[in-house]
Image 1 (cartoon, rainbow, N blue to C red):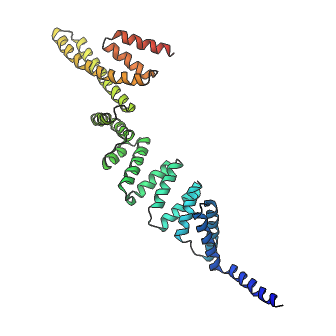
Image 2 (cartoon, rainbow, N blue to C red):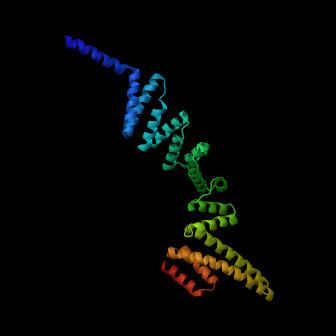
Image 3 (cartoon, helix red, strand yellow):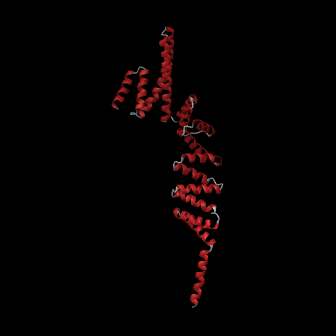
Length: 296
């Protein structure tokens, strides 16, 4: 009889505790924290959903610290849609930079380029670290280049600290070229090659640029001479052809290096054939012809 009298109050107290709203909330919170610290991120998310349901019934809101753990857990298990929603809530409730950084990385990871671009432009002033600002600025520059928004890309490049990554520097060359700033493009390209002499895209751009300018100049001089083939015109032509030949030789040297690194590249072979012909290097031009024939 005494045992029954002891058991009944204990059961009653246990039932009362389980029905205690505060106790329920604390249980869910503890469950999230324990699961998160143990690296059991899926369990942390499940406990978070229970905590959300509890707060809905009470008309209250989840504390930011538990929202943070849930957002990070969703990132860890790659539940990116859920992570995006949780991170946006975290950003709304906090001045922390971390959710901004995580959300930007998710957009990049999932290929949501438009969202990524808008996100970083929106929170650009929140980036405190100069290193991070350079990293994000470089990423935005690359997106603008992909979109062919060259004026925006160039404006951003001018506002950023000096860049050392040859890939980004070469994008700037392309942007300058696309917007008609060829002289500046050449300067940037030359500067790039001084520090990265074997960077192929820049070598190819420079080789083509020199060749095309030499071709244009050569054709213009020959056309003018053919219209008036007098002795004085011939003397002038010979003088100009020496300058043009120097350009062809500079382009040739670059294409020969490119060809050496990639012997089967037809573009390099075709350019070399044409340059050899302009320089009256007929034997070398014939070799290029044979290489092209063997690849057909």
